[in-house]
Amino acid sequence: MVKSWLVSLYKRGLRRKRYIFFLFVFIMLFVLFTTQVKAFIVISLLGVIATFSTYYKRVFQAPPVFELMTLTTVAVSIFYGPIIGSMYTLVVSLTSEIMASAIDPFSATYIPPRMATAFAAPWLYANGMDLALLGLLMSALYNLLQQPVYWLLTDPEKRIKSIYFSSLNIPLNFLIFKFLGMPLFVILKAIV
Image (cartoon, rainbow, N blue to C red):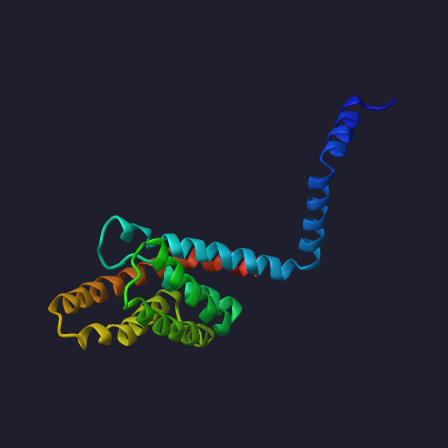
């Protein structure tokens, strides 16, 4: 005897052939390209998180002391390599500035120091550096390379902004790496 729920499921499937075909193709691609698909999903998800972490600049015009860009840049460069990490940094730096409506002439000065952290982080992590200390050093490296741009200007407001940002961003990144970095790295080790 034929089960009625199987017949109704079959009839619904016939009405939605196109969706079933796309689902089948998606499953096949996922099976065939699992590593690449997972990498794309992970990097995209981290990029969205990093982009929206500075969204508050749109409402509250202050230097983005809280940002997840450093954490996600370090994570992507450690798990996927410094080249992918630097390309990730380029894209996410631009998208976060666009999302926060904070594009200015200094936006271009944020990208090369972040790329430097993408190249330094995997080397330090491979040599056994603690994750919280790595966050502190990568934030310090970023500020050491980026903040002289503000110091070379004659505008005292930019210099005050630089001191404000550096004095709060470096310790905050230490805490971010300590409390958010550990769970993130555990999840990424399981996925990657």
